[in-house]
Amino acid sequence: MSEIRFNFVTGDWVIIAPERSKRPEDFTSAKKKEAVPGYVPTCPFCPGNEDQTPEETFRISNNGQWTVRSTLNKFSALTPGYDIVRHVMGFKKFMTGFGIHEVIIETQQHNMPTAFLPASHVGEIIYSYRNRFLDFYKNDEIKHVIVFKNHGLRAGTSLQHPHSQIVGTPVIPGQVKGRIEEALRYYDDFGECLYCWYMKEEQREMTRVVSENKSFVVFIPYAALSPFHIWIFPKRHNGCFGYITDAEISDLADILKDTLLRLYHGLSDPDLNYVIRSLSPQENAVRYFHWYLSIVARVTRTAGFEMGTGMYINPSLPDNSARFLRDVQF
Ligand SMILES: [Zn+2]
Ligand SMILES: [Zn+2]
Image (cartoon, rainbow, N blue to C red; front, side, top):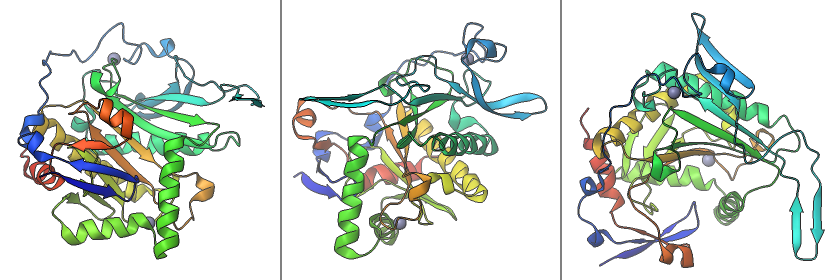
């Protein structure tokens, strides 16, 4: 029999229906593996083609070579340099398409998955996230910043060269408002941070915890929205990712690399997205919100039911998915 579980963090009801699928390994990626070269002369992110990307905004170098660099996005959805004009005219409520959209090129090597970079290099990528994130918020018109990575076609990217993106919007996106409302409701009802509580409960049960280090816990939540919906929670309560310390960056790099390696080996390099959910630096001290990183391996598809209800069907028991990831050998 299936079970309907409530996800306190997202505010979603999730149908856990493991009998619709078989075992966690049945979600292994079936995509054809083609050998990808380490350097592609026509790739704008490959070394030597730096002049083909828009303006560079940040770089980390080692021995005169860049290791991570960020640039404005050539095909950005939102553009800076405009005054924001807000209008409400009858049913038409709109504003200028203002915003900032950058790409973070994670490595010089065209075919190097993030999981296989040295942990210190993953740390440089996270350091770049923090730099760009804090920089975006220096613009008063930016109200929300999201850092994300798309890996693979099903995750929304056709560009193979490893990269992440960061977008600053002049509005608070609906999904973010929803998360804030859930967190505030819980805080008001029980007087503590929803995320701190949720993490403590997962750590107490341990069955869905994949790994843990000094600063972070990785787990598949009790009411995961999909089979490999993974959360990385910082143990230290902070509303804003921008306040991550250098020591925590190093711990996050270790545990993010480890999680990506488990996914790579366990599910044969699945397409995936990850996002950092965070409030602004000005809101860091709020007691009800707690920044975190969410990874979703694109192993299932959503359809009319999800579209019509906003409810997800997870064809895998989160405990089994977590055990599967814990047991991956690499
Ligand atoms: Zn490339
Ligand atoms: Zn907290």
